[in-house]
Image (tube, rainbow, N blue to C red):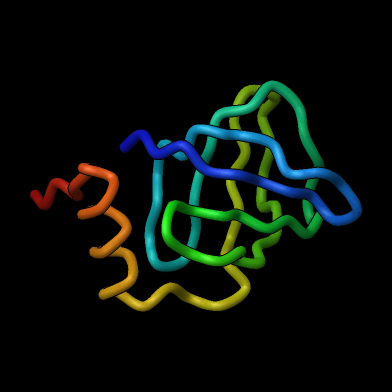
Length: 90
């Protein structure tokens, strides 16, 4: 999965990130620095408003965040469809 999105930490300015994992509950994106748990952040995906999240982990090159409210499966499917990505099911 590779989706360009905007991420904004509480009190900060939005910046571009590359989302590499996305589910109804959480996401992972590439970045070289950032807030530590449990900082609040907002992810803006193509075609959607900002989604409130909480930083769950940060390893210095990636950050994982949990959505404050689960995404609806139909919304996730739509995001993947408009970005040309798909989920591979085993």
